[in-house]
Length: 285
Image (cartoon, rainbow, N blue to C red):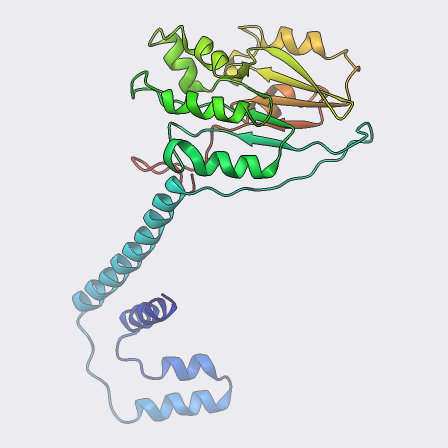
């Protein structure tokens, strides 16, 4: 790939400076010697100029080739990330905790499977031996029907490893409210997930009380559907050792939640980043 890039850069340089054999030498050296070499090069007579249309055409071809290479590499990366995942590890510290607590956070699977019945993902989670499994929403995909049995199967397998709780994403909300799938929350619950809809769940892990807050909806709805009232109601509490706040949309935190008390905030929604390519999605998902 580096050799191809070097060759394309040389071609672009030639297209920009046609007929200039002295360019590379002048760029490499400075001072009197360079000037003398330049005069010596031109003393042999004027070289035949390349027509302007050829210069423009060659430049365009080089640019198209570069864009094609970059586009191919980007597309390959997108395809790879749609069938692979990476486990990332973060550490936070709290003086209240008497022992360490390991939490696995999963979000935005959008019906994807890693191995038959998500066996690879489940095995990786199991190998981490988590104390809690938290979900950030968007395990279903709005517009692809109401068949999400593979996600329910995943939840059942995860609940055999550790307690599972989480929030709904915008895709679950759209299925629930727009497609009138009123059984969605009941199905998630039956599969072992404690769904937090402006609610709190508490777990005792190694004698430590872990408080999990789940904020529902989008930041624009913070004051409309109970999220603001819920956060205000739990703010005075201090009878816990660690508090984690879940929200599907990450901008919830700087816009509305930054002044509330919790040690860790987790969100999903943006997949690989804020930038999304038309018809393709985020470059890294």
